[in-house]
Amino acid sequence: MQKRRHPGRRPLLLAVGAGVTTAALAAGMTSAFAATVFSDNFNDGDTSGWSKSGGTWVVDGSGVLNQTNAGSELARQFAGDTSWTNYSVQARVRPASFGSSSALVGLAARSTSSTKMYRLALLGSGRAELQAVNGSSITAIGSASLGIGTGSWYTLRIEASGSTIRGFVNGTQIASGSNSLAGAGRIGLVTAYASGGFDDVTVDSSGGGTPTTPPATTAPPTTPPPTTPGPTTPPLAGWPTPTGSQKVNATIGVSGTFDGGLKRYYGIGDGGQSESQDPMFELAAGATLRNVIIGAPAGDGVHCEGNCTLINVWWEDVGEDAATFRGGTTYTVDGGGARSASDKVFQHNGSGTVYIKNFRAENAGKLYRACGNCSTSYQRHVVIDNVVVRDTDAIAGINTNWGDTARFSRITIVDDSGRDTSICVKYKGVPKGSEPTKIGEGADGVNCFYSSSDITYQ
Image 1 (tube, rainbow, N blue to C red):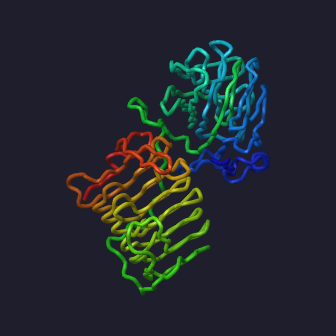
Image 2 (tube, rainbow, N blue to C red):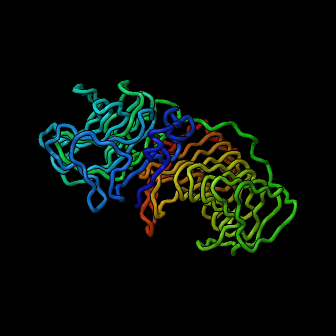
């Protein structure tokens, strides 16, 4: 995987103004689940964007950042911005040597200085400990005996949301508590009288839970999940009548806004599930498609190559997929509906968050699916509000091992007396070429967020 630079990652953004991403982090990210805002896998061979404090740091030929001086009392690399508040930071960490049982290799969050931070430490004693560090004063928020050893990789994650701090090792929560040491700060990679390697650092602005396999004992969030704005219009009771029809022989490219005036567009592909069909519409980054009826054959529907907005778009007979979100970080579907999607309506291949509201789906496999075997394994999120479904197997499918989340509110399920429609199906995402496996379903307060009051049966 190549290094990805996001707004808030580049040194110039961190130094001056920091752009939209850093501003949003500083404000606490009141919007639901922004995308990954920082990532570095060191494949470019350098530590640009990081600031060193102690130790001997070098990126090796395999793209791993190593701290090699096991005698260093404190060795740290910092990145990000001191104004960052609610976020989760994750990295793969490999201890190479421990000088003592209290020596450590770890990950830091909300670092306000080189000696004040929250730290998730792998200790020479074999324990993992979530700590509030203020100079020489170290408060243990929680710990677990995990048999930590040298030479093995461990995935560490710290989630900071308000005063709640959580620590995870290999997807399992090992500590959680309330602490007011620091309300904002940078991320960091840390060693103390130890050496180790670091790789695949990511920061997500959600601060939400993302365990690999949600443990049964995981506590629900201490603060309620963010809610979506109220609907602009409720889902229509029926399907619109086209104002006209236009056969399409080649993909229609859209930049800016395309308003179809509720005309029907049809003619691409064969109406089946072939993966090679062209889309009816291809939206450039920032484009809006509105008031369009897509008839059969519809090919691969709509492709969003970046952030996009679909307003009052209707699919009379979904072919491969109604829409595929391929690039960007924020995608909005407001109004409209889709019928006859034997697999899924919306396919989420890129990173970020899909917002689906005021929508209706009939005779579908899934309304939404976060890709479970794409070439790049992003963390993906979906927020679904004020949606009506009928004859639909599942509303959303997500990959919990990649930290995906799905939030539901005001969901109406029609003609399902047997309660057969699954709300949130959990999968284990896999590399491209393999097939993801279903590992569960239902609300858990970690990856799938809803309560019985969010679901209405008619």
